[in-house]
Image (cartoon, rainbow, N blue to C red; front, side):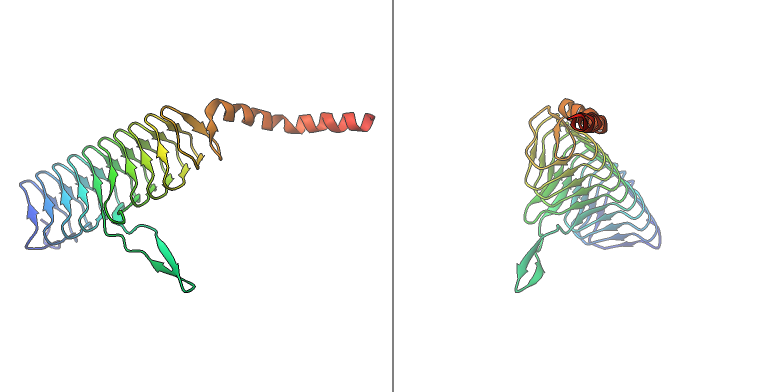
Length: 237
């Protein structure tokens, strides 16, 4: 434990835990054996960290959130921030409190500056073995299945459910309250506004089956030629 770190007397640190400079470890925190907490990390009250986790510098794990065994959280990630929810009352936006937590299962990796919001009442959950890239936004009450791959700059609105082994390309966006079936593949920059069947491969905005989207893309490139041909035909008439 670095001498500049603050560790609450009620925190429980197992053997082999390392706490870097300028960290804050809140009350009743549990950190299990072999975990490494990098410099300038914040571990909120009642949070739990499993065995051999590695939190890189500047990670924020907020109150009551849980991280499993062998989890890697890269620099600047925020786990347990409040969800984005407001009620409109008397012409102004009133914050809806989010009282739940985030649970990150074993063997997950979370990229730098990714944000995972806590649930409103229950939990946001990231399934075992899933790998999340940098700059991903995971909204409140989202449930990510096991073995999912989510590339950089993806945005997932609240209450979306990914089943296991979903793959999502960079900058794809998901509307709220959707279900993404097992093994589905979502191409980069796709816009998902409806439920996705298991095994589907979608591309585009709005998203279409990959082969159809590819065909439309090819035809779009031919539109100038087709219009020129049409104009020439119209002139002859």
